[in-house]
Amino acid sequence: MNYTIFNTPIGFVKIIENDKYITNVIYEGNNAQEVLPHTELLLLAYKQFNSYFDGEIKNFEIPIKLNVSPYHQKVLKTLMSIPYGSTITYKKLAELSGDKNASRAVGNAMRINPIPIIIPCHRVVRSNGDIGNYSFGSISNKDWLITFEQQNK
Image (cartoon, rainbow, N blue to C red; front, top):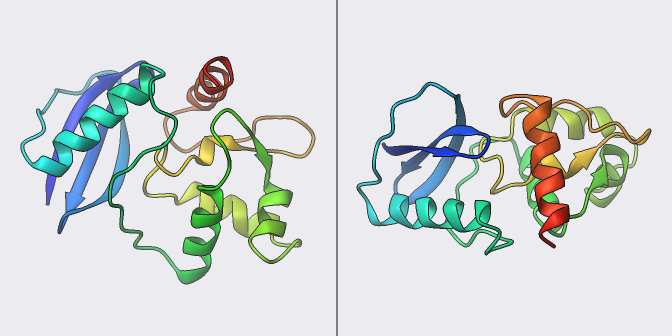
């Protein structure tokens, strides 16, 4: 396992690489220590995150590996098709994933998403217009990411 930690506009982010795949993106908060990327893949991920936060790229092009159930994989892969700067409701994502009644299961998939931002769970909102919860730091991070993407479409 290799990792890098670096600062972003929403706080420090830790990216973990296992067997030539990005497997986890973890929110470290505001008081972490930077760790420079020391593998080719971590350097690529670091550069793409910086380009994302600079508004230069809309999608990540790095190899990822999901270690979640087949259902959660299906939901998370469906989520990756939601365009940059757009949002979708939990209900609509459940529908697109094959079960219109699975909003809670979709919410759970968002909660356990091991690769947030690359897999943009911040783009999923509630049907009533509320942005909903966000397990990558705080609701303010989710709000920041949604606003940032909408301003940089």
